[in-house]
Length: 133
Image (cartoon, rainbow, N blue to C red; front, side, top):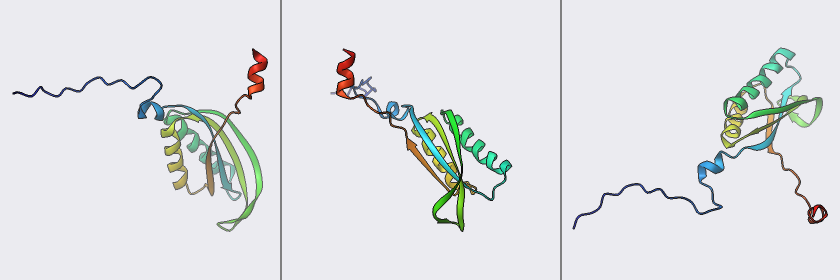
């Protein structure tokens, strides 16, 4: 008896299921809050934001809006800072965008803290769905 050579078969996933690559490639809406020290001059501050925006765009993301919140008092001192400049950047991207942005912001010395959050859109209630029918 001879064995048939094993050839890779075209295995398709059951309907409704997505491959791991397809799940990773899903584009979602996010916001990143950047907290920078007040000691930074405007030029260095702009460089930090530009670096973050370039990282997002290089990794398949799209910047929607940048919203500076200005100088705010911190809840507790961080690196001997009691005040900091807050900025929120709204963007869309995939998992690769998020992981690379997180990595870059961690090693950027000018960013005191950062947080990346998924923007959740509110679902329609049952009553709103019934009203449209």
